Image 1 (cartoon, one colour):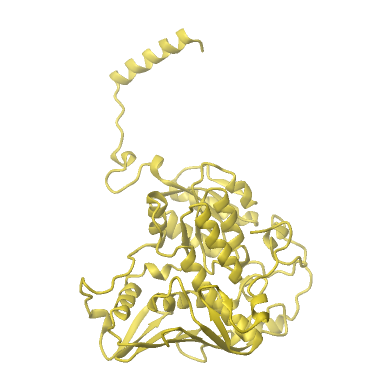
Image 2 (cartoon, one colour; image 1 turned 180 degrees about the vertical axis):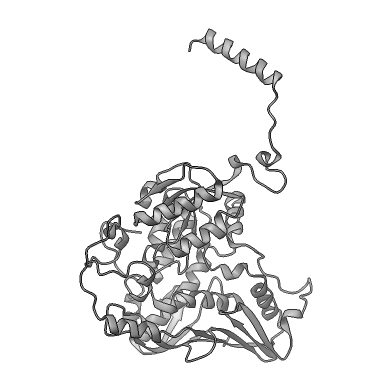
Length: 435
């Protein structure tokens, strides 16, 4: 089209626009509580398994602040499931699918990623995303080693990225109120936090019955080598989906699974988000008889500088959760029922006065993340918080591996009395992957 044709076309278009004015719905302008598509945060999902799809459907697709535009997974059928969910929610086609997360990260139209991979990919994928200019919401535990957490925090700071750890209990009004009560002194001096995690008896029995699985053909449509990524190269024996958490190359069992949530709550109650314990001791037993090898029995105690104790045990019977005990009362947070039972007083009915301690308020973890992506303010669970909570899981495992009390410096993040323990805070990544 030459200049004369362009001007003629433009004049015709203008006349048509005057004759037939375009009616723009208020929702397209971001009115009536909605956000215009052009103002939404574009999001890519990395890891479309059960957890990824759950948060995708109930979090990201339900929040008008974001627009999911791409799905990635090493399993082709999971990519399809993610795309189907996105397109069904929006009533449109065009969601991109990827087998390799690096292709998704190369898409400059994507602002942020939601990472719901197996644990061993959490830190590497987050760091690759930050270097690609993406903000990150990552499932817990955010790291598989202590040094990964240090690298994660440094990278997010260096690249000025917004980060949200998937410890969504921080966006619970009930737990926020409990935290404010504790910090306001309504329990008196906080003396102990006792955490009980689910027992692994059923998993152990399954492990012994299965024995060491034989080498199997890799399923069609599954990139097993990319799934392994930075983990050691081993033949395919199954166990790459929900069961990955029972193998220490990929996860840490209930200690890093449920334990991360409850240890994060403990850190929050103790006002130790940028710190941690000064000592750890523990004993435990790993699973034997099969491919799974994480700790299934454990008794760990953390000591903080103010004298508070945090213990972690597996449940023999009863409910998993956290009991907070102070000089003037206690409460028990049940993980199973997401409720709080209290002793000495009904703490949930006590009103916190304006002059008392208040904590960061978030009522929706995904919405908090997307809001912070837009205003560039810290989320309720930034990288440092996620790292410090995951650190306790790793400290517990190292203490049980060595079987002796260890001193820990939360400032330098080094053990004070064991060179052997300090060598265990990191692990090599399989080439060519790096942090």
